[in-house]
Length: 238
Image 1 (tube, rainbow, N blue to C red):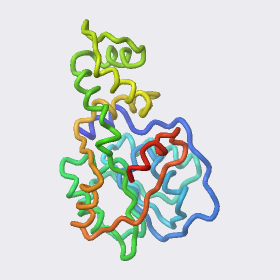
Image 2 (image 1 turned 180 degrees about the horizontal axis):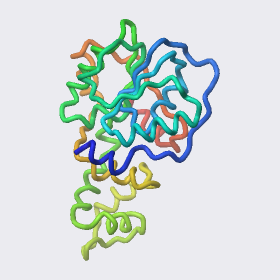
Image 3 (image 1 turned 90 degrees about the horizontal axis):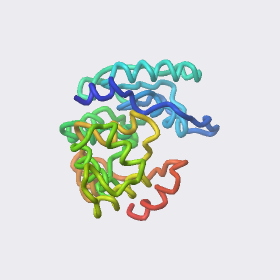
């Protein structure tokens, strides 16, 4: 079902990208676990300068977009593989998996696979869904079940206090929070946020326990640039 979502709506959409900086850390081999349409590779290249990149994803269509876009940008040292993490072999100095493990039926299997693939003294860069930061999404998903996708999208952006003939109160607070935190600028964003078939969210003690159980330790936090103040609002919780 996850593959079907990203086949219909490759994610993330390509609307903008930055330029690569000088002074990036040189490494031998990196893994992008969940490459999507390739923007994750560019995000990796903002920090590292690897000799070789392996980019894996389950979605054939997303990987096709990734290969086309990255080649157009002159990024040629990427090997694209359609597979899951459990079948992958090798050792990697840096593994980036942003927005991936929380979409696995059993995220612990993904954590174990990343640890197995990590070279000695290597680094894993993880992006996991925060239960607190995404607290508005279950409320929006519950409402979305009662209308078509088009009707629900219209209600979200038009700001009506009524929904399906019912006057809403508490739900409006969550709608405002949802719209302030998340972008509906593309169809793929809309589908990924509200209709993804598999999603897990976490609180910090849970993440700490998971890392510890796999012999990993937290070493730092990466705050994404251009977050429109979202990172500033939530970084105090980390």
